[in-house]
Length: 256
Image (tube, rainbow, N blue to C red; front, side, top):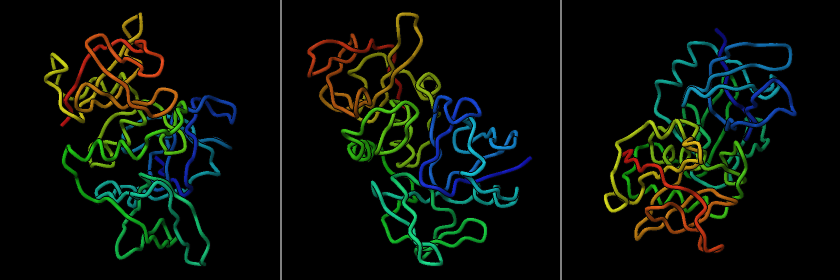
């Protein structure tokens, strides 16, 4: 088994081994993974954080040993807490990172990947935060454009949004909305929910296709065109701009 880590800011994770293949997610700086299959130009990987699989360009990651993979997996996670920031390499070059990037072995403003040393002088999150912080993190993505497969303040999809908000607070969600819907405890009514709980929505075939984060007073924040705030009722999401329902409510889950 081979192992790798992302040493670039934002790398596409694709459905197939081609630059024109659908981007199904993104790999942020510092995320590590198992290499399930390595070809000439592409590798099929499984991310350690959420076990999500896809293809990554071989030029866009760095191989690590199994020992280093294990050490990173068992160590406390430090995440960048600023929308956009940068690392300084040992030779003085700058490397950009975005909100939620992982900082392996971060201590005294230093981090490392293999023999590469970096300095990071920005804000970090390295502990589990209480439920009240979920919406504070969610607001950081407000007005971010919707991008299928996105996980960053430059573009994000609905489940990428909920996953990253929870990750920043120290909690683990799976990658896709239908997978996230298998987590947590079911709530019977909106009135039972608290700010930070997740609402899931399905299509006409009953497949869960959308997720958002419940706010107080029957509002919801979710990624639909952009990360936006709308009303939620027993039918679903009511778009405050178009004055119509856009998503049909399926279930509400309490994760924490």
